[in-house]
Image 1: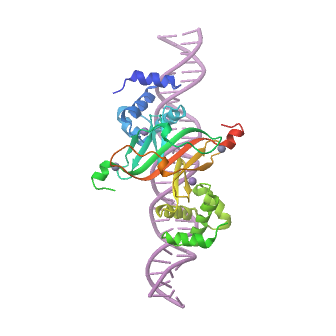
Image 2 (image 1 turned 120 degrees about the vertical axis):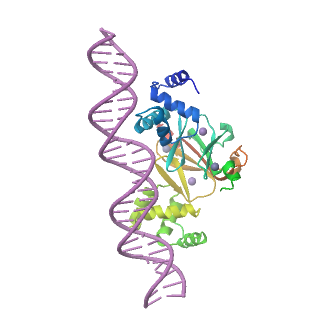
Length: 140
Length: 140
DNA sequence: TCAAAATTTGTAACGATTACAAAATTATGT
DNA sequence: ACATAATTTTGTAATCGTTACAAATTTTGA
Ligand SMILES: [Mn+2]
Ligand SMILES: [Mn+2]
Ligand SMILES: [Zn+2]
Ligand SMILES: [Zn+2]
């Protein structure tokens, strides 16, 4: 369980007024760090925040990504997943259980772009396959 | 301009009956290699193939990706782009002109996943930023 | 040539996201 | 604390890309 106060000041420092629902959503992203979709956030927080609107979740995530306190992952075509870890790291999506796993990765492990004059502000590296747990079960 | 016959035999070799519209769509992907969306393919080929249905473009691309003669790119959340180059290579998406650029990349330049027991079957590496041409124009 | 199989088409359905205006909440100045 | 202005949230409708589906067309191959 993370301290509310930490999240509030973190949001404030990033130009986001730390309204209660925003704090809860950021807290959810940080604590679960499960790369949730909007629907996952909405349906799970609905218990904790009765009357929460899905539009608010959309608005908040749009705000978070524009302020760079969260990153949108486009691994699959039919869903956007969100991550409060904005440092460069790799992702693995299991095509059996649909889980998204993090793995550590330094920026300098990734190849530089061999094109002159291009400025890069986002690096995305993700893999698809079958995770160890699903393989042990004989799936995939 | 690529020879029809080459494309027909290529499709045939990959278990795809080389029907005229499929040949045209594959030819479009190969010749333009512009990572088009379904809409781009549809609206541009409509001139050449009157009466073409967008559903056919969807069906054909689904077939192509399932037979692994094309790859779907999920760089942006609201559009799928298609690539007839199925070899491992990197992509750069310019957030000013929306262009998608290729860059070469060997599989062994990409970091291995530091997780035990995971089996990987797809590698995706893409960057976002501003391309040289847009930077020269002072944009971004 | 002819019937069976596969493909294409057009339309409707679907699901995720966005637009928008009214209601509620929060911030500001007194 | 109060009034007021600004911001945020809500609920619904609209939008957009994609998929489902059945009828029409084309292809296959005996
Ligand atoms: Mn992550
Ligand atoms: Mn490419
Ligand atoms: Zn798994
Ligand atoms: Zn550009």
